[in-house]
Image (cartoon, rainbow, N blue to C red; front, side, top):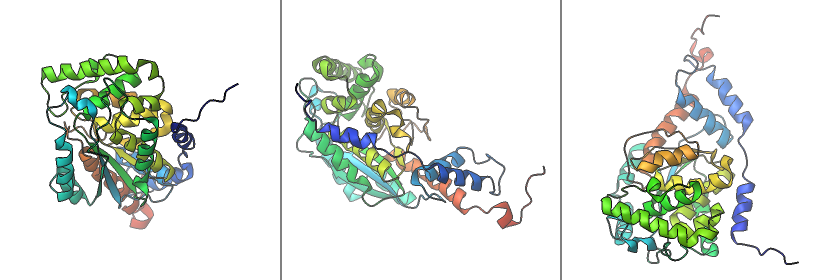
Length: 341
C-alpha cells in the first residue's frame, strides 16, 4: 500500500485548519461598555459592530486602530500575452516605482489617514505561466509565495489593509472566481483597466481555454490558486492566514483581493471572519463575489483602481469606530442622566 505523497500545500492547509477563533470575552466586554456610552443604544449603527469585531479579533479592550498598515503586492502574469489588458505588463513595474516615489493614489490616502504603506514586488521580471496553456505556478512556488505573504504582520499592526497591482490580474481574478463558484466566464469578466468589448471577449475566451486546459485539477481551492492564480493572490492568501494567527483584523480591498480571499472561504468559510470588505468596486463581478463570501462592503464609491485604495479609505471608518468606542465618556463619567425606565 502506497502512502499519499506530501504536497507543499499541505503545510498551508494545516495553518488554515489551526486558525484561532474570536475572543468572545473581549467582545462581551466591548458590548457591555457600548451600553454605557453617552449615546442611545445602537445610535452609531455599524460603527458599533465594527468596534465589537475589532475587540473580538484583536482580543483587547478597548480595540485599537492607531497603527494601520497597507500591504500592496505587485506581480506580472503570463496571460497578458493573450491581449486581455488595455496596458502592457511594463506598467506594473512603472506603478511600483510610482508607489515608492509617493505619486500614486494610495500614497495620498495613506498620508491623509496616517496609514503605513509597504509595497512588495513579486518577481516582476518573471511573469507567472500563461494559464491558457500551463500552470501559473508550481505547488512549491505557490507555497513559498503564500509563506512570503505571511510576513505581512511581522510588526503586528492594529489592522492590515490588503491591496495589489498587476497588469492582467482582473483576468486572473475572474478565472479564480469562475473556477471556485461556477458559471460562465462572461459572468465574471469586466473592463478592468478599461478594455473594450473586443478585450472583454478576449478575457472570457482566455478564461474558458484555461478552465478547459486545467479542468481535471480544479477540484481543490489551493490547486485552483496554484494553476489559475498569481503571485499577488498567493501572497494575499498568506497575509490573511498570518493575520488571523497574529490577531490582526484585515480590510480587504477590491476585486482581486476578494478573489484571493475567496480561495480561503472555499476551503473554510469561517477563515474570513476576521476580514471586512472595505468597498465594492465598479468591476461588475465584485459585488457578486462579495455576496458569495458573505461580506457587506463598508463603501460603495465606484472605485476600480486597486492598489489598496478602497481599503485605505475604509480604514478611516475603522479608525472612527475604534476612536468613538474607546474615547467616548460613559454616562457615569460625564454625569449625564441615562434613559428613563
